[in-house]
Length: 221
Image (cartoon, one colour):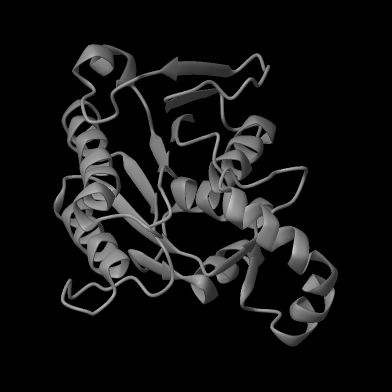
């Protein structure tokens, strides 16, 4: 299997990249983003692209892939809606439109979030924009799946790129054993996210939108 990973320097992106590089059935992993991951592996290739709103310059390098894991995103806190839409909707659809054309029918897994608003009419700006993005992806000629995780625990030395999130995880770390015991089915790890995404890319899933309980069901087989 040949896979693309968008946003591989982010927390979830690092998790799925790690699982892809360890999976024997994955023969090639190509990352796409504004910066390189710095990883070293025989089956890893990296494409650094300054403008993530257009993929015309690298279109030829995006053909022949079986799956795409799109984990690129940004926190909405403090952002104007137009700026958040430009990244969340604009960057995602620019990539997906290109991939639907050059790899029709490929599996496209988009990391969204718990609470995403499919109606696009709710009060939360980020949820409306995520919902609009999901709906647009589901209309494309792709095998598209939306992952909506809630709390994700970073593992294997992985850290969030967002400073406030890093502080949050550092403060919360001593409490995680208690939280896992209290809410065993509500907390996912970066490792489990990567494993679930790979599993859905290989075998599909009965639903196109996967909430936390569905992601856990995939991991548990």
